[in-house]
Amino acid sequence: MRDIKFLLPLLVLCAVITFGGGGGERGRCDSSTKGRGTTNGTWLSPRFTDNNDGTVTDGLTGLVWMKNPGCFAASNWPDALTYANQLASGQCGLTDGSTAGQWRIPTVNELESLLDISRSKPALASGNPFNNVANSYWSSTSYHASLGARAMVMVIRFTDGRWISGTAGPYNDYRAASLNSLWAVKTGPGGAVKVQSPREYLVYAIGDDALARL
Image (cartoon, rainbow, N blue to C red):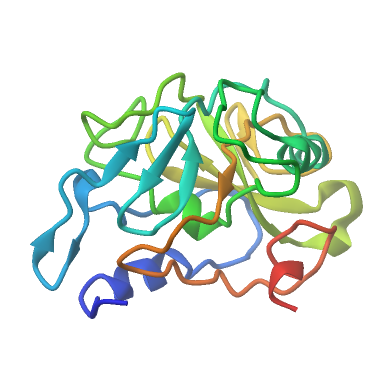
């Protein structure tokens, strides 16, 4: 893996989340370097590769994303988790040969790594190969699990690149009742950088971010 000394703090910064009261919009992060990314001062251009099989590979992080992140209707988090676990080639325009269990919900930092906050609606780099981008997406990073029905999961709003904690207008991140979309991801061949863990260890369910690190 290449030296990424200047970019790594930016990815770490995305993981510094304060879980306090009040809810609402809580942060905004840009780790995309306007959609291209750089290591040792060398630009990755293009950053994203359309694999022509319904998937897009991010050369910066090595992650493989659904090209059509609007395939699934907005749902609560448990349903989104089921959709991700069952996703396979033949669905959502995928012809990549993937099987159920290979796709997952991204961590909040993986989701944030796509952002270009100099842009909006969506907050993605110009010329990116994605289509049908929805307004807000679930991450796998859960927190406040002790709150029962009000337990939360981090959500990124792709209209402007903000992440949502609690309630913000029509958006909120209560896992049982909120309706957000799924942008599934799977592990790829490895990229120039490794996205940092959000460091949330409170396990809610198989497939959430905390359980993946136990």
